Image 1 (tube, rainbow, N blue to C red):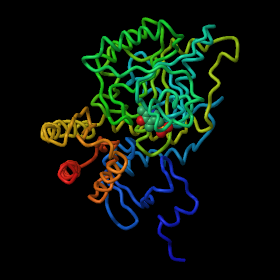
Image 2: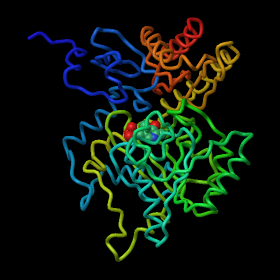
Image 3: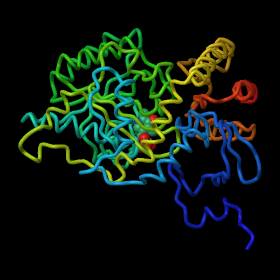
Image 4: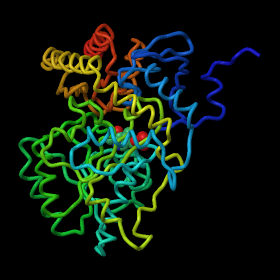
Length: 424
Ligand SMILES: *Cc1c(COP(=O)(O)O)cnc(C)c1O
């Protein structure tokens, strides 16, 4: 039997994420990927300008990563992590502790970003419960994104995702991310919130809010918010799922801060885009609050595939690549190229704001936002027709390319963005 087009076969049984199936265009059948490129079933090539949601930073089908997974697969595929341990998890914990903010002491495994945040929130709530203190409120930024399970969704502030569930969410009070000129006002707001509520934790994306449209905020302001929380005994949970592993120029966005978070969430590039795995790390102080002669004061949260050895092997290989001379050189190259591109286009009449940090580049277009839905889709189609996978968020065009993108491919992304500025 001749193979039917993937697109046609897909339609019969599959339900895709973030998709209104009545109106959405059919998904693209992808058959192959290598480095910064992927191929569709019609033989067209695309540059993966967002590293498949910020995961494949060392390139698709990276041989070092796939070899590490293959070798691990032949030795120990999987064993549950409750009551058992294994070398890949231990070695990964030892390696990670060396690069994490210096106050981090314990590594808890999950299997995706949302559940890493979910575990972090449960840790914070139980931290106080174990001390016989009931704290029922979280603080989070406006327009944050932390994932799609209920706790993570509660902390998220993008109501377009959460509308139907809003009546069922945890209690969260929001503050605006601090800009250079609003730091004092946000600090005062935080102070008021903490004094008038039983706040357990402050959950935030450090420095860059991804899903909100790669919005940046002040590192100094965030640092002062952490300081304030720590004075008021509110745990700080940094969601580094997008920013982690070099995206902002430093290994973690929190490396820009003097005050360190109590809890940190990692996923996405953790496993170089090859395996779903996530980690929630915490300080000794948080861990110690779960030590007790009472069994129930332990942390009773588990996912079957926690600490999957294949994911740990991928993560170990990824960490080695992250600090290799080759990748360090590429990261620097992209950072400088982005800075130059920002200088080149920031005064374009259709550009409202252009910014970059590390390998993240974002451009807000000065367009009539009432055309938002259709406009965004036309922009997306324009880039795909030009062989570049960028997924504009509203009127924000951004790229977060794999570190291994070639100079020519990066220039092609810039060229497509400049063409878009002329066409739209
Ligand atoms: C992607 C993302 C998540 C959710 O991770 P999933 O693996 O999709 O559940 C949470 N927080 C941030 C900042 C993210 O970018």
